[in-house]
Amino acid sequence: MTSKLEIIKAFEGDYEVFTCTYVLNELIRVVSKKIPNKLGVVGRYLCEMQKHIHIVDAAISFKYNNDLLRDKKDIPILNSALFCECDILITGDKDFLEAGLTAIKAITASEFLYKY
Image 1 (cartoon, rainbow, N blue to C red):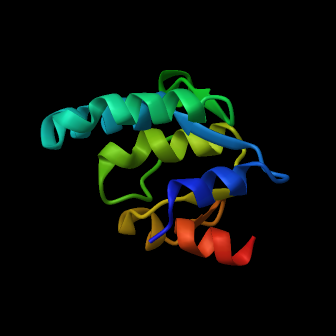
Image 2: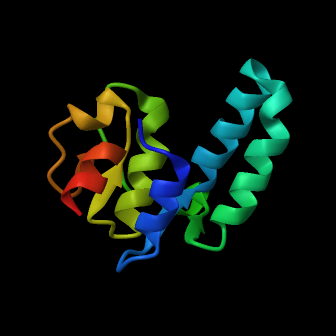
């Protein structure tokens, strides 16, 4: 299991880190539904992370039409990564990991920390 401290330390290197509003909204929705008592902790964590990452409005990145992903709900995430010209998409979602993406490399957080 990768700790949040390890991820934050990895961001302090030679990397630019991006996420999109779609991911953040989904995180808040899921936490609110499944573990509402942790919403304050997640909010504080996201505030701290904003110092280290770029947040992209998922709505502006929909210029790409992707049929690569099984789960169409994941398209805004891939589109945002492509829009930002990211080299690596760090994810635990098997739809990304098994999609055979060529324009971007999808890897897990643990794999990122091990390789980079």
